[in-house]
Length: 152
Image (cartoon, rainbow, N blue to C red; front, side, top):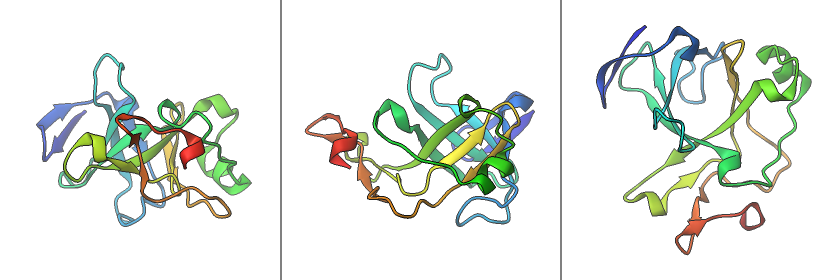
């Protein structure tokens, strides 16, 4: 499937990479279809681009959260499990949005509102966690090293 992007122009993505967010994503409620694109084609980095299929100007920089925060833990409420049609936990990937203001070393990620995707069903939701100490702007790095969940 051809997808228009602001950063890369027109790119080809497999149909299996198209994720439907039935309720949209926070701030982009009206857009439902996104392409999940690994930053590295070989899959050697934990970063992804979530590119809106319907609006080329909308894309999010995402992180496989567990690559940086081994102790990160969320419990999905039943309503989200149903929306994602999850049959087993391994079907889900948990990603968080990354904000880079100047350099990657100063990047932050939003641990409070992860994006959960059922890759086999191509369904996604953004979940706002309550009752956690997770931060909206959690630094990815501390002293030029990966942060740890203990520092969250």
